[in-house]
Length: 338
Ligand code: AHR
Image (cartoon, rainbow, N blue to C red):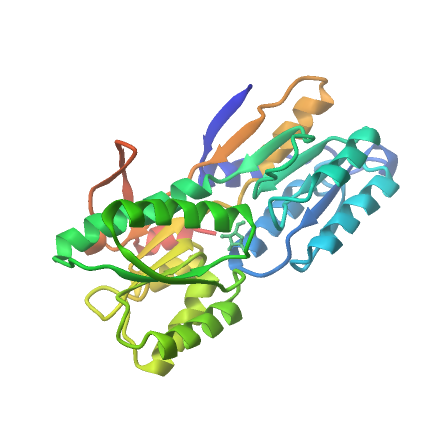
């Protein structure tokens, strides 16, 4: 299997600036691409959508049919079937959840339309040409191993964690939960509860309001599986009088590291933020160009991701024996982020 790894945010942004193919291309010369996007639940998702719309523009030689599936699994399958009816040249799917895909992917296969999976994975079918996305389990392991090293450095002996997870059954949720829980089990931590906030700010706030009532005074770590959930959780903790961030009641861990998330790290609210890189579209375009040339693309392309904190919260840690580097959050780092 052809495997390629590690695509950084900057390289993705540069690749997105590819020169226009032609500004006078006839409509029937454009490559028709259908993109079934998850929805619009987060800052991450907005950046992912923009990355795809920038790359698959008419200026770059594409006719993009974009469908925002609003986190509705049935609507996403319908969108894919509508792309088959439109006889597009390529279909891009960011699967809301990881399973239930084989039937519709078989239909794409029978129609002779190659599918490229972006961001989240499909776990119950191999009828697609390539996948470009993130290693969500590594993100969860990084959060856990950082917490262990940070708690040790602070002399914190007991971890009582509450998790606000992402959309249940999404590979981003499964991977982050698996990674963090593996570390929690290894060190004997108490994971008090895990409830879904559906990757939204409103969901994060609602779950955290319930946690503050049900587990008052019983937790010292909150893990939000994306920044938008963390924004909602912070509102709930503010309202309940729970303090968070370095030196406060609660260590707040988040994922994505979008601009607003890193601003909250800089402000001493989020203690550490584990990046998920949304700028994958240029690498999807490479896959399409490879397929168009009649060649076999890399089957898996992993985005490069960084782990962020303020200087005082940066600690040494390893994942499976591999030393991890952390990035200090500065104004320049925030400025360069998505
Ligand atoms: O699949 C990527 C995840 O989905 C991002 O962490 C989250 O923000 C988004 O909604």
